[in-house]
Image (cartoon, rainbow over all chains, first blue to last red; front, top):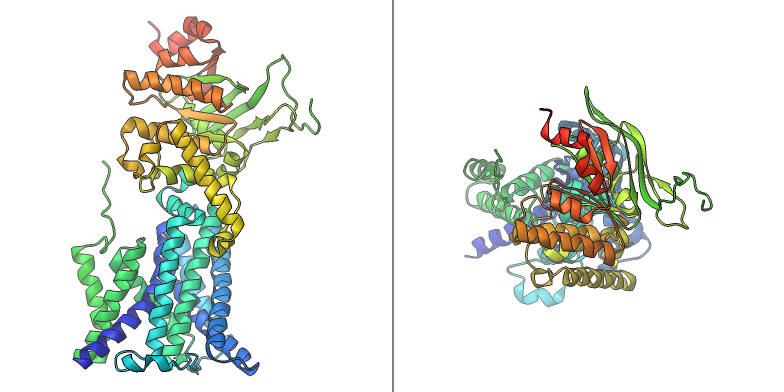
Length: 300
Length: 273
């Protein structure tokens, strides 16, 4: 039973991190129907920024909660700037062209960012510092959840609640929903599309960067290629849940997290990715629009 | 002439709000609009009629920035004491901000947004807060959002849609959807309102209600209206001046009585015998 609980908790935390990345995929797809392949790279850049920031800040004598929070904020701001810039230079000039053009541009951007970090930083695995402070009050549940998992769940839950409130109640969130439904009409109603799209990229990147910080804390090592597989998995999660749907991305990510964790625990850890992608194939065969996606009705 | 008036106002005593000069739109080899001149008087209802495919909706699309006209210019005279502005080449959202709003022939609401949210999207261009305000929720943003909701709800009350404020737009009856589209356009505080076949699909009593609505809007909101419509009794009743298009050309213009008797118009609609 404890083995099952262990696997459950590790699946939950793994799924939470996938969810943070998947949200960025699904939001961008929902608004401009683009699969942003460079998104995984933003997550990787978030992790590297966090590493550099933590080195600088701990040299200044910071530690504990202050260090963790400032590192997360710096990584989020920096990745947000990257997300904005990528959209500005690689996607916006191609708006209105065929759907394939920005897709290829996204793949190019992904390669560029990977290689840029490889050259500017290193091509080796780098050790990531343990940023999570000790929490003595967790003693009673220490058998089920460690402090890293607590922080991951806390961060992801908070960011998802914040995102939901943002989308539901703010003027910008409402504009995002409107643009996703009918871009021309939103523009005719006086909505500045460019600002809405930029905001979407910034928010998606901030969430991905938080995912990067958390994965660093949890795996304790990062490298320049980490965004590729994580991006693939998060994309799978977004498709699983129904791409374009925000709750769908979270559900898809959790399913994927659990599936991987149980497959690794009960079969073999080399079967982890196999099971993940088998689930994707099954979903695509029986429910191609994804779990929460709406079936497209063809108008004749 | 007001100070810094880049585009001189036409003489002849007419107080214009919008003047479209020599509008042409060519799609490949098809000339959809051919050098059309059309002007709208301040605080009036102007109608645009013509057979199907005569370029009426293309004209709307050129004026509101959906299409970039091949040739021609659109000048807006916001007020007697304000300088005129050219709308040529501006993106659609900027044109809306300058004071043009429109509705569509086939209703285009945000179906999965509530009635109130649809109107709030119309308020968007009159509000300032961006991403930063939304994330920090500062006092100014909250005050602005509250004011936006109040303004939108007042509009819904005025136009009798307040009882359905929290319904999804797609669940509204057809007539109410038409009305909501107009209310959303009004939420942008337009100076000129362009209505594309607002009576399409309405029954007789709904059309009568629409006629009252149009008169009401012109009087209450002080907007000038340009109306595309096939329902001739509605057009003849509400409009001060009528323009007639045929094959992308302007074939007649004048007050309703004249248009009704114009042989060119009769020919365009009924064909030659």
